[in-house]
Length: 158
Image (cartoon, rainbow, N blue to C red):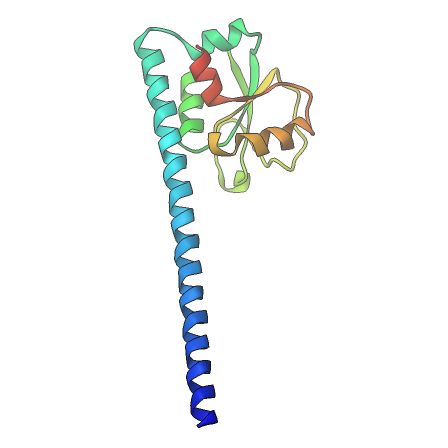
């Protein structure tokens, strides 16, 4: 009788532990999905703001020049980073280099470096991965003495 009770208790304990592990995996996956969803929602709102600026006839390049930022670096070469490079192409604002974690696999006409490398002096660094701006700003501010700006904040200031 004791063996049966011990077996049943062991089985119940095992099932409970298994259910807990499945719940944990499901919860982790749901949290990852939520973070990704939030990231793309933020990106959508930022890009929508950018379109509104363009439609109103305002210029990101003019704003940067008016703020004294004629020589910049761009952090991040995702959708927003590529759009920023295109926006500033043939403008008064010179993009001196791009900073990206995947620098070794990026082929551009301008210099692309890793965040771990030495950063050349520029008037400002514009960070395009807005979800991680706080962490990136902290990392870059420890390495270079210039403003580290969020692209989203800039677009909402124009």
